[in-house]
Image (cartoon, rainbow, N blue to C red; front, side, top):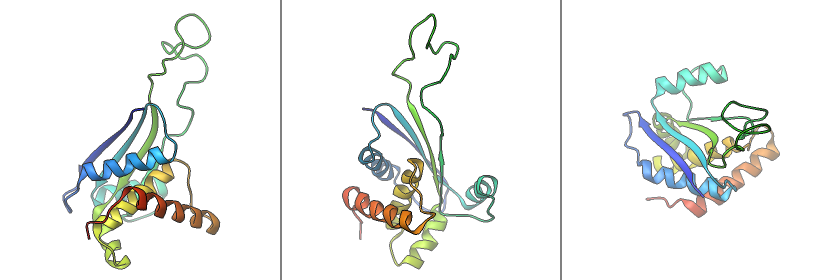
Length: 167
């Protein structure tokens, strides 16, 4: 099993421990049943960048705390793709092709404001956002009250298993 988390800190507002958040993302993905070769990006962005993404992809103005961009579709190509194998001459598709799960973009500056409102540390807020973002990549949603309750319960369970507050 190889799940690769590509983490990048592309902001300067807050110090980010990429290794800590990568481990949390990995634990969440593993507990959610992700197996085999898989890739996820975890990007910490500034307010301007996340506001641009929020406008472009969600149609909402202003910065937000987290956005998830699942990569939809079957990880294996359907039909005949040149050099990918399949039905016809050649080798079958390689099991070495990783499943591209998606990208999670977090904004520590917005998370810091939310942490104050929620009376938690910045690390606690980022931990929740990492887990929340990963669950969205995997199809979890919170549009309906029942879905929100299930998702929040799962977030608490995953955080209790994979995150220890520094406080």
